[in-house]
Length: 513
Image (cartoon, rainbow, N blue to C red; front, side):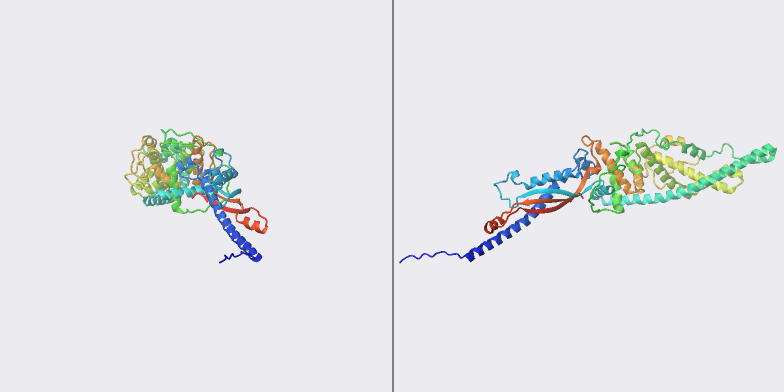
């Protein structure tokens, strides 16, 4: 039996149909490959961002818990193109499989080639008055502070509100008393003038009667000592033995006083409100030294005082804080004097002795008020002296914590010299700094804290060119890539169509939170 051999036959139609089907399959595969290449380009862009922002300034993180990349890379010459060049180098390395020694070991379906990268938006640490610095500081404090600590911070805020109210009331009364005292002195001088005229005209009886009413030398007026002290330097009174720092800076050294670089990217603010402000102020107290701090650093020693005073020298900043503390204590002490019946009676008796001879009862009231104000001022000087010596002073005074008596108010200068840190009940100097910080704008404190961050880091070896307005904290970039076609080569070979490289783009970004 013979063998039968079938002959294979393919028609032209089937051939054309096969080519079309194969071209469709290859085109579909190429389309899927392009979509995969887009995802891969986005992944490479993200890896590039992580690589760039992984080069954060380590000392900034170590000292202040803040993430930022020095966009000048230590040169002091900031340019976003410098950062973009760094990003581009990482993108090329991550995309180049061949350069990583993987050729022949695996198939790279994407074969991406970087054409261009451009940072379209970027944010700097100093933008928006240091808002990014504020956000990172608050985020750090939220992770580290315990709930009980937040409760205490609210108490300090309440104390600040109370102190401000008393301070304003005190200031109103002091202004009124100053006017009344001018009138009192005027009328007192008129009475003394009348006494002299009686002597000159020979009215010895009237002159003798008037002189008998004038207080003897044994009745001293403590307000004379107060006037004497007011003319002295405030620092001489409250810290005469201290070695006050003479450090100072120029305006051009402060980022808040010069023209800064600005980014064009606005980052969302997650934290705001009273709680965040309280946490930020606590961050400041944790990271910057004050007058009583043992460790001093940077171009200014009294840095918390700078955040409050905003002056260019340690001495001026300390003086500003002392004056604010004095005014705060005057308000609280005056309110205590007014409400204490014994103190009120004592000042009224002394006022009667000092001014009763004029025969004008309203002047006695004026003198009493002036004595209460002077007494409160004297006690406040002692309070500030004690605080700067490392002692404690309660916000609300009691008979036990009151130091200056009306009898020794006239020798207040001696009391100040002997004051020390023996008082251990009440609030410390640091606690009062918290109150002062709560009385001021957190916006100003943010800008001034960046001044201190910059100056402190510049004093570290290798960071002399550090500037906060060179610190990049976020970018958005666009990258362009080219891929060689693979599966389209089949349809190109069969159909004779033209072949060109495929372009893909990827938008990406990164920001510290």
